[in-house]
Image (tube, rainbow, N blue to C red):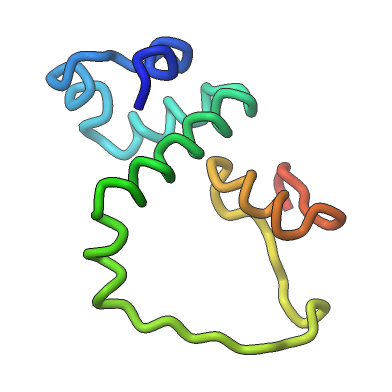
Length: 102
């Protein structure tokens, strides 16, 4: 992740400070909730690129079983579970996606 993105989102740039800042889930949630949508999207996309580029995604996905099915869209209730995933829903369902509470 670029130092510019770390700085723009207000994250510490030293590893020990990062560990302290995000050592509890409630601290992570509070940080994520404090970000404006624009910064949240940039941070989420950067993490996704890093996650796929550093080999962790591949290692974890080897042990996963993926299932695919075809169902009518009106039978699928799609709601945003996590704010940081908003860009995924907006890309997948641009006409129906909402980034607010259900």
